[in-house]
Length: 240
Image (cartoon, rainbow, N blue to C red; front, side, top):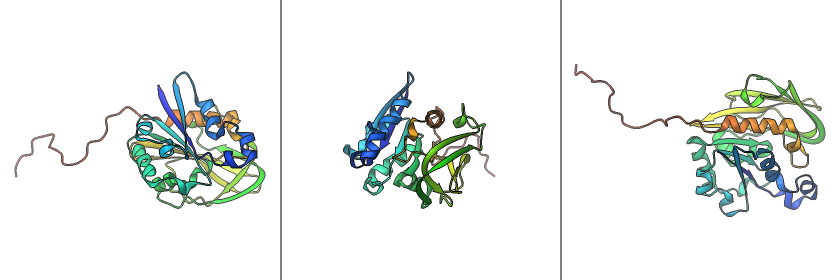
């Protein structure tokens, strides 16, 4: 059984009626619904839960963590961020969504500012699949088209992705690296751009397919963990 935790700061839903109308069960609830399956056990956690819902027990029992945050990045405790970082290095998958690009956990794993250009103008977004052989793109066409989304534009201050899977074009003319993979330690990371809180993006079946595929891609691989430190010789070392 694959164990997935969907984390959402859950602040817009409480303060903005438009957001709560689009996502009455919260962004985390909407994502959890389409991820739940016979082989996937999904739980949710939010910023205002004790330890942000990411207790040691929760983290140790999570195979893939999804992260959505926006207006309350600074409220996430550094101690929790460090625990999440260590779990990623130990093999837990991490999927960072939309404005989670500016989260503490994404910044610390990237080592850069993760800043970008942005604009809210209800403009079309076309997400081009630039790596159609990648498992995250399985079942998709050449592109995903969203009628209205928030614009993110280059330069996106991230390290060069290990794999660039998707690139977005916006009606206003900007482009953006919108589907990026990384490996840190034994963990896999996928950053996926769309998902502004006032748009019903997470109800789009193609967007759901990307996230479902990403969860499967990011899940831990059952391989022996490397052993570090002083090592005994495997062969006899003959004295010179």
